[in-house]
Amino acid sequence: MGRKPLSPDHHDTKPGGSLAAFACPNPDCSHFNRFAAGNLSAVEYTGKRKDIRRLYCSACRRRFTERQGTLLRYSKLPEATVVRIVKCLGHGCSVEATADICEVDPRTVDRLLEPAGRRAEDFHRLQLDRLQSPPEAVQLDELHGRVSPTPEQRGGAAGLLGAVAAWVGPGFTRPWRSSAGS
Image 1 (cartoon, rainbow, N blue to C red):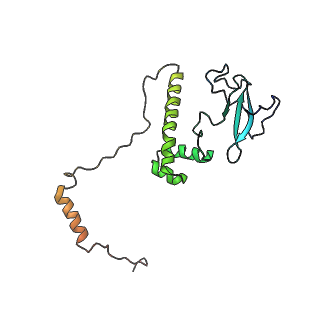
Image 2: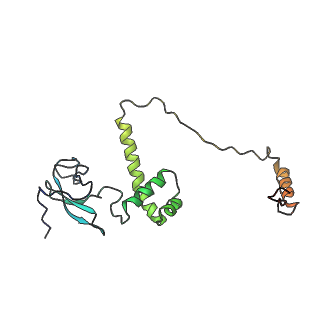
Image 3: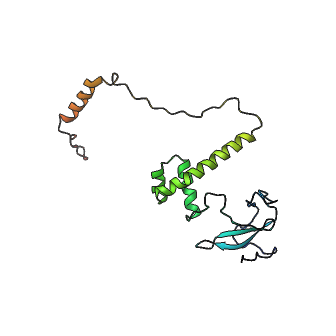
C-alpha cells in the first residue's frame, strides 16, 4: 500500500524549496517536462539526513526523487563533493588528481565522468541549436604549443655526452656557497 500524498495546501519546508525547477519525468504524463505546472508536491524526505525530497505528480500519480535525471541520482556523495568533482574535471584535472583533491576513489570520478560528459555534450548541442545563424568563423583566443630543439640543434649525441661529462666531472655536486657572502 502506497503512502497518501500530502494535501495541495501543503507548503514545502525545504530551504529554497520552490518546486518550479522540477517537472514530471514520466514521458506518459500530460505534464511531462512542463516546469512550474502546479502538479508536483513534496510527499516525503529520504536520504541519510532526510534532505532529498520525494515528489509526487498529481497528473500521472507517480513518485520520483528530486535527484532523478541529475548526476546525483544513485549517488551517496554530498552535493558539494559532486560539484567539486565536476569543477575539477572542467578545469582539466586528471581523474587521479580530481580523486585526490575531492578525497574520493578514482572509480567514483570515473563513474561521474561519463554522464557528466554526456550532459555537457547535450548542453553544447542545445546552445548551438539556439544560435540564430551558424557561426561563419571560430577564433581561438590562445593556442599554446611546445617546441623542443632537435637533437642536431642541441649538438647531437656529442652535445649530450659533453653535458653529462660536465656534470659528472666535478663529482655530481655543485660548489658550496656561503650564504654570508664570504
